[in-house]
Length: 445
Picture 1 (cartoon, rainbow, N blue to C red):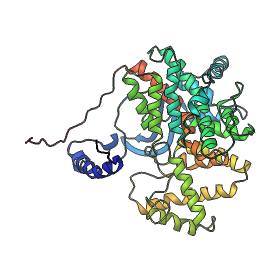
Picture 2: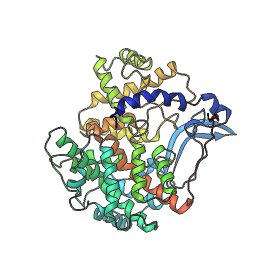
Picture 3: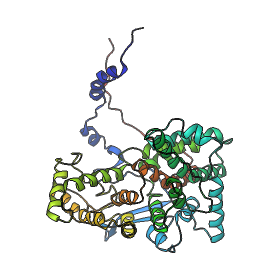
Picture 4: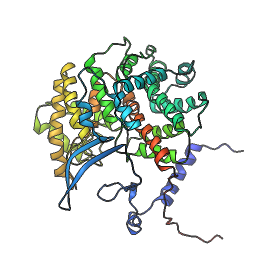
């Protein structure tokens, strides 16, 4: 058998795929198909019903639709109120997780039992860290986590059981263990690939999810209350987002086929790691590094505006013509998560002596919508989204960039779990969309 260079063969066939797999834009219009399940105005096609969360970006008045400040609701409660009702010394991730999973706010006793259940679940099988996480370390922590999730299924005696109580148990264990999978995955990579010191800190059952994440990440396990509080708010804001995002839809599609919890969450992880979904804050950070390098005076509005124009004209940064962190597929006037998060970002910047960097972010937040409006024909307003500031927060918290998307998953696993449960209880029908074939029939010789 002749040896073949498979990479060269694949490169040769690339043109054939491009030729035969390209579908004309005109055909989408002709058949009334919305590319990406979104119409020309960016509105998503209705594919399901949910009680879990709601996004509001437009309102109606006298039969006329107009943009409004964005709102995000979890189980009937505005996310802004859920965060603001917390005392300064309280953490909200756990109580918000209870709300999303079970549809009601927990009482003090219910919250304690829920936290105890998470603490009891916050442990990996014997030698799992050594035999699975450290076995094949990777810079791609999302892949490392996904491998670990699928491997955990082999340690579960009831992996495939479709009982709701079994699914709840599995979801609680994954919610509890995601911070460990993320942080340990990073430490393994950092040790074996970057030749840095290895340390594995066990979680403290008395601490919150945000506190444990920082405790396990840092060599000395130390963190301040302000740091943990800001991370906790970030997790609350990223837990769930309306059900229409790609990874949540993936969770529901795969769940509808009757698969197990581990497979459904692994599929969601594969969706979230896509740069068009979970990696937005990384692009913001890369862009901000580029701006800081090429703009000499961060307070000079004219100089900053000129460089933003160069970015929009595809002459600077990645030459894609995008100012990352600006605009959102759903929100128009404002992203409610960014609005809530901003005060915590400011608090942390003062705590970390990063006011100068914050001033640059504020200036770009002011100028970018003006530059985008001048350069692009837009159908709705442009405002900063939560990713514009989340990367800055993670940087101030000294969280490595390799953990930005995994940290998103640490939060979003709650939303995925809630939607998996709702799909199993409330839908119970396989999601099977239709595709219109535009294939041209050919005669065989």
